[in-house]
Image 1 (cartoon, one colour):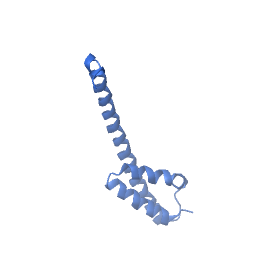
Image 2 (cartoon, rainbow, N blue to C red):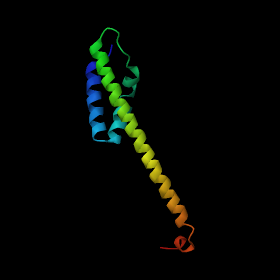
Image 3 (cartoon, rainbow, N blue to C red):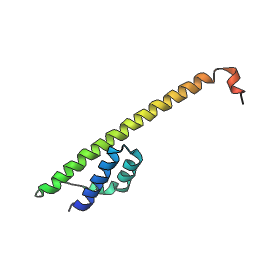
Image 4 (cartoon, rainbow, N blue to C red):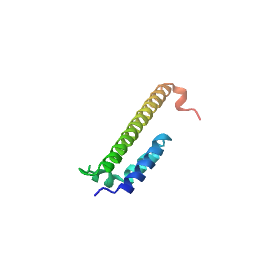
Length: 98
């Protein structure tokens, strides 16, 4: 049986985190509710529950996309940082600078 109260609360919290683009909160919510998320299954006779489930899926996909985009941005920044550090270390004076 699907826990609609928990699903509704999780959907609202996740939606709030996505709207505020709070990646840490998204990751926290998903890790704390991981078992619940993977245990969700649609119900054949309960259209209200299925509608709520569709809403959760949409929000969860938005959250996943936001986390992926943030990860790509951070990876790009890290690459640029490493690239700059390597080019700076080519100069002899930099190694001995204080």
